[in-house]
Length: 277
Image (cartoon, rainbow, N blue to C red):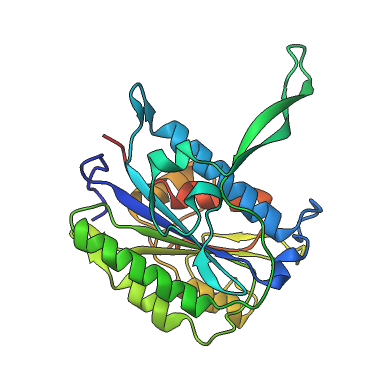
């Protein structure tokens, strides 16, 4: 399983579920002083930019991936902005060509003398930070199940799609396990669809990254998210280990109480699907 090559003729898809509830306005607990909604949106925008660069060839960006971003808070709806607003799944070439805007950001770069200096760079934005309403996670997972199910009808031989749920709170519209089970029961010929969960918090305690059992998790909510999450396939597990994160055959795609670094690592590992052809 999880060995099919990803190509333009046989692409896969990523569906990001983005918690946009009111509590995402709170600051993340790891001391950076940033709002949770800003941290998650920045990480996701950076990932979309990096995927576009990774898939860029002489003739342009190749559509190895189709990408969907579904926000859930005051409502459950596609969260890409600008020209892509309202679309559930978008080929990567269109993502690359249509950021909503370019922001000027400051980036630390080497000064040639052993130090760092600030340099202004253009930062593409597709997803805006939003914090409003409850946490209808069950509805968001059900929306992802519908999107992925439709994708698999047209792409039965693909590398299994990956759903990444980025959240800071407990579901406010019922037990999400039924919808999560529905996602994980979908499959291509190459294996079951993958569901990974990232928890961001205002708590300043250390993150728990990619555990293989629930014994280290501090509350029932964390344990519930852990049990919703898929086991990491071998390739992702190997890459996780290369980053210095302990893994086992039971390691799941789950991070609890994530800090900024953990958010970035989570997205990197969760979208490291396969070699591209």
